[in-house]
Image 1 (tube, rainbow, N blue to C red):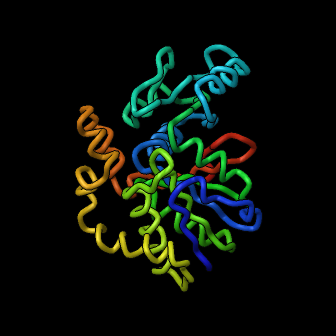
Image 2: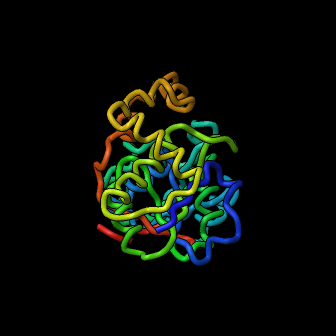
Length: 239
């Protein structure tokens, strides 16, 4: 399996049609999506802007949809939920559709929608995603959401951990970018908690008192769910 890593959504090209794609946004969108679906959310609808989110939400029956998202890490005024994984409890989201817009993660998801199949990954579901990606039988692009158009340490490390899990089950042929991510994973695999202070966005969340969010995002393989983007919605494609 040939594996490539793109460090920002801008690097995603038009050559995804024959590839499996995995979108990674550790702090926090991917973790939020995995948590919501694991807790019974019916579907996540990723949107680019808050205005898009409001428009999409109007297409659902009242009481069946929740507006969710953030800008600059902060909840959006008038929305039901932010982008904090602990908010997405079963009593709040079970049976509901969540229309979500985030600064980086939903943008990356929408750009990766042209792949043969697209999944969502964070540290919380590394092993499940690696197993799923191998079963697809295609070359793989790991698409990091990054931060404000730049690379992010936590997403790069997560991509490397997925590659490491794939390599443990068989041969992989990493691109140079994938090899660099794999090297970062080897450096951090036994000290992932250091991402709280060594990642720019980790420090930002810590300063904003988001310690519970950081703990949720750093809970490696806490879930087995592999969310899949299909028809504009992310659903729990695999338990």
